[in-house]
Image (cartoon, rainbow, N blue to C red; front, side, top):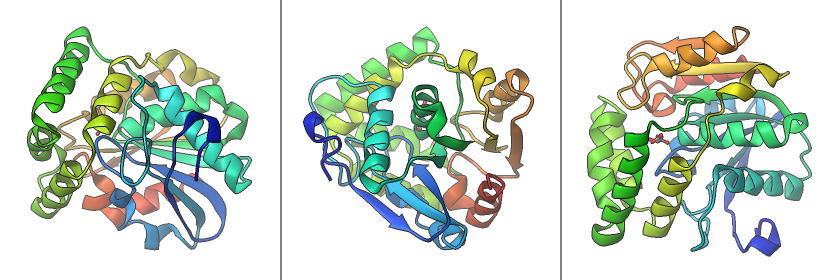
Length: 254
Ligand code: MLT
């Protein structure tokens, strides 16, 4: 679908199951297929709406810079298109930043929020500079640069590494660069957390080498009502490493 038509983004998505709408938002630099193992475990509980963010999977992108809010607006446009006013949102890693941007912009459209292997804080200056350096490397050498450096940090599980590596290599340069810059420029969402008047779940692997579980604990310290669900031995990709446990955790949104 064109979403919304005037911004020229053609957003691809999948929809499975019945129940309360739950939007599953993938992380960087991946696509909607990271949720494949979890779909059968959730589809009798939720109406699953699973987009490819702009620049990833089958979705198109634009050359001009964009932000977390643009990603969030794409999702709002998708929900409008589907006639869904309010939904639960689950964002994985960068998808969590998008979910937070959505929750800030459209609080009345959120039934509850799950941040999976994510964080609310913005980038420290050196991390931000590193994103721009990576964007330059991707432009010059291709997306394999990112795939090779991220793969070992995603999971200790070789099958998960293999799947994610191929998935990352299949993404477009433009999408990877656009998202790197959007992540570099994202703001700190910590201050908006106490304003949330819906349930917040923090689902985090205790072996996450990319975004340590301390980031989730930081969220809990400013939002004590948030429920932190620690997944033992899970790395950065719990929906693939431990689909059953991750699905059970997500069901707590209801
Ligand atoms: C992700 O997994 O979405 C990204 O690694 C998050 C990030 O780099 O901040």
